[in-house]
Length: 186
Image (cartoon, rainbow, N blue to C red; front, side, top):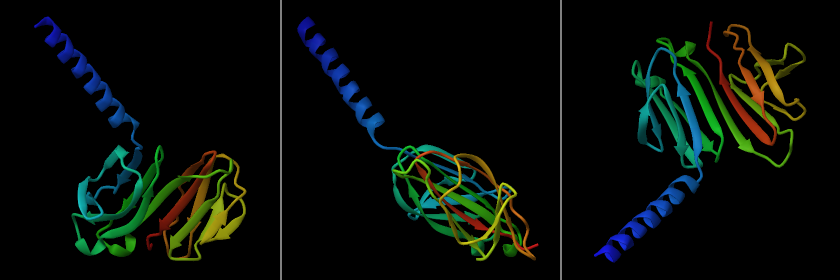
C-alpha cells in the first residue's frame, strides 16, 4: 500500500511538472486596448475577447483580424490586421466619439528585427499628415524612419482642419515598430 502511494505521489509530481513546463514554455504575446470613455467589444478573428479597457500578456503569437465594436454606434466599428509577436506588447488606443469624424486612434505594433536600430513605419488616415519628431524636421506620412536613435521620442502629427496628435514612443533595440494613426476632424 505504501508503495502504491509513493508511485501515485511520484506520478502526480511528474504530471504537474510536465503541465507547468508546457503551459509556461509556450510563446506568449501581449495586447493592450483602450477606447477612452466609450467602451467597445473586442473581437479577434470574430471571437469575443472581452470589453475595453483590455490587457493580456498570454495570447498566442500570430496574425489576427481585430474588431472593435463601440457600444454607441456599430457603424463606427474599427477593423485592422494585427500581428502579435512573442514577448512583445501591441497597443491599440482608439478614441471613439459620438461624431464618427472625431474618432481618432493609434496602433503600435512592435516586431523583432536583427538590426540593433530597427525601423519605424508610420502610416495615417488621412495620408500626407505632417509628422514632426522631437520638435525637429518635418516628414509626411506614410514614412519609414531608419535612423532614429534608441530611446523616448515625441511624435507630433498635424494637418489643417484636423486635431493635432502627439504621442510619445519608446524606440527599443532590435525592434521594428509599425505605427498607424487616425486623426480626428476639428
